[in-house]
Length: 355
Image 1: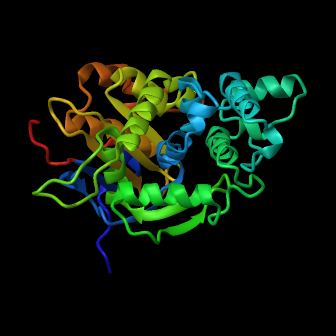
Image 2: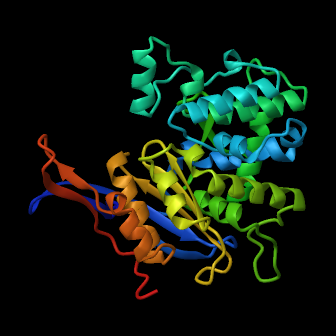
């Protein structure tokens, strides 16, 4: 019987531990050097929405972004798991209009907006939820833009056999240091998702924020082409310039973390408590850093404390960010009278010492 994964989070009510969440964390540089690990870096996880910034690459490298004059705001929503607020739905609708399509071309499915305010407003006005409200609608609009630009069919652009999806899979595999044959399943939005080792997800994020190249001492990955490097930079710039498009106006970890970090990192949530982070090159990590996190039981409440504590122990964020984001780092447990009765707290040590 395999050993259980380490505890990452405890949920406490007073001095009573009511729940524990286990999982794995790995941080890696673009050449594959592991900086920190906890648990099983070889754990197979579903990539889910964490790789939306990578799924956006063909929009740029194909020439679609240039042809359709896709701006930074639109590129950000292509990378998003958005709240379905008007700022998101109007941007996606505008992007579809640019490529000669409308909401009916999407194949992500109708979804209630993540934003309760947006959902309540629609219900009050008697308006239906549409595919534009799906948190993945931007990603799908990007896939459609690529297909239209390349004169490819748009009727089944979500099929794993469609050229757009094959290009996404090839690029992701290359960035993650994987072989060509990825384990593939169907995501919540009906597009492909991939089963990959947690380490590979971290490597992909490290290379997104700091394009890599072959050196004499390390043959872990091929050189990133100049066109790819430009695409990476464009995506990072869009995400950090428009964090409200990646999540929402408020109350979303990705958005608030990127706002607080001021352009120093990108953050991307995925369903079932998988999370990807990329720290841009800095004094602490001159080659940049990719981080991948998986909470084993898929508990959403455990993700933010693990993300914040991981970044704190790595030295990627400091006291100002932790104080600003304390509600994510150490969320309170409240009862029905809104009385604080406990907390959700990270309890792991990455062994980074005083770094």
